[in-house]
Image (cartoon, rainbow, N blue to C red; front, side, top):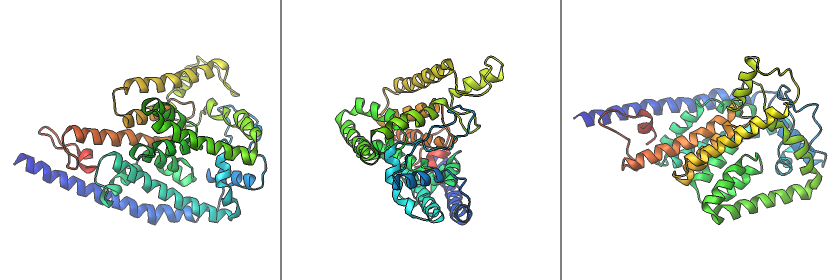
Length: 357
């Protein structure tokens, strides 16, 4: 009788969350999308990609020397690899507003693709209800709509990483991710060590092809300029509030307590060394602590730890934390011996696990 009551309560809770998730979809399509669709300004991250596409299409230099790499400077410059600009160069022929509308359509596609990948990672039934539920969870995750409203490339990276862990094309998808933001190389390295050629060769081929594309269009000096003027930007970090880097908390604390008299400009060598060492320790610690976990769990936790411990970790990276959470849900359900049923125990009912089953 008690178990039947718990199951009934579980269904009721699931229904409430499902209705809420459906309401989220209605708000997304009926409020968020119309609001961003009518924007006419260019104060969005998508503008950086558009300008880079124009330079690539016209074969103009992608990078320029910055006035400063200092963490107290809002730079707003293109800092991605040359091949990314080449790939997006066709959009340069579109009017900016048409391009912006296309970006928002792609943002929605990436959002729901990631939600679908989370359903697979959680081991749940691949139906519309579960996609809605995980989409609702993604929608309330801090940073999600920041990324989408600004037209950032991050939602695409969420989806690529999610599918990399739940499909056989892990090496290819991780290799594509690394062409956009190099932090994916961290997972490529661990996956290549753990799964050998199954990941190493596909990832290496994709990265090599992307590099050759950048070299063919822009030549080797573009990579030199990227290393000189692009890569130093994320290594300096930022004191902006939406940089949630865990290692940067040490610098903020030292500055607030008066232990460090930073007044602007590029970080001193000691601060950069601290950031580099802390970031490496964070990623290495994640690898060590998850050494006995499944490959997917180790890759997910290591990526999240590496991103959180990097000098520059925008709040828009937080949705990546849903990947290890989804894998944890699947493993918990598997340990309970239920592949598709909600988790119910005698002592308590886990609402989240019930919803995502």
